[in-house]
Amino acid sequence: MAYIPVPPDLPGIRGPMAFRPETARPLNELVEVLLHGPHSLTLGERELIATFVSSRNCTQFCHNIHGAIAAAHLGGNEELVRQVKVDYLQAEISPKLKALLNIAGKVQQDGKLVTAADVEAARKQGATDLEIHDTVLIAAAFCMYNRYVDGLGTDQPADPAFYRERGKRVAREGYVAVSKEYLSAHAGAAAKA
Image 1 (cartoon, rainbow, N blue to C red):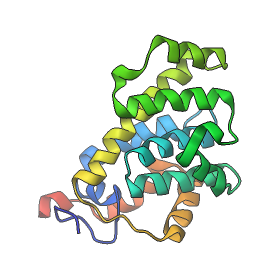
Image 2 (image 1 turned 180 degrees about the horizontal axis):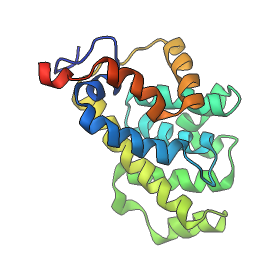
Image 3 (image 1 turned 90 degrees about the vertical axis):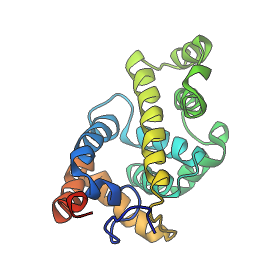
Image 4 (image 1 turned 120 degrees about the horizontal axis):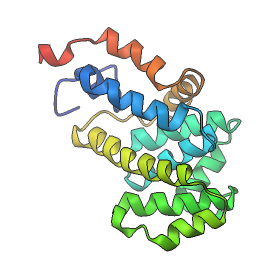
C-alpha cells in the first residue's frame, strides 16, 4: 500500500501521477521524447536503457514495464531483455549499445563516474553525441522515476501478464496517449487528499 492515498487501481508510477497530474504531464512528455520520439537509436534500444537502469535500481514496476515495452519493440524477445538485465556484455546486442549501457550504468551509480574514455569508447562504436546525451538523460531520468515509485511505496505487481499487456499498449500508443486515460479518470486526486 502506497504511503499516500493514490488510486488503488493504478500501480507503480501511474498512481502518483494520477495523484498529481500537474507534475505527471511534464514527466510523461519527457519520457515520450526520450523513449518514443524520433531518434537514431531504435525504440527497443532506448527502452533497454531504461530497463537496464531500472533493474539496477531494483525498481520492479519500472524494469518490468519498460522490459515489456522493449520486448514489444523487439518482436517479443523477452529473453534478450532478461539478458540485458542480467549481463548486458553477454547479451546479443550491438557493441554500440553495450558501450551506451556502460555509460548508463555509471550514471545510475553516480554521474561523475562517467569518464571521457567511456564516451570515446561509445564514439568508437558509432555512437553520436545525441545518442550519448540521450543515454545519460534516460539514465538520469529513470533514476528519478525509480525513486519516485519506490519513495512513495507504490504497489508493484509481480504478474508478468500485467506488464506484457500494458507494455504492448505503450509500445503502440506512446506514453502521453496512454497517460491521458488515467490522468483524466483520476483528475484531482491530490486535491481530495
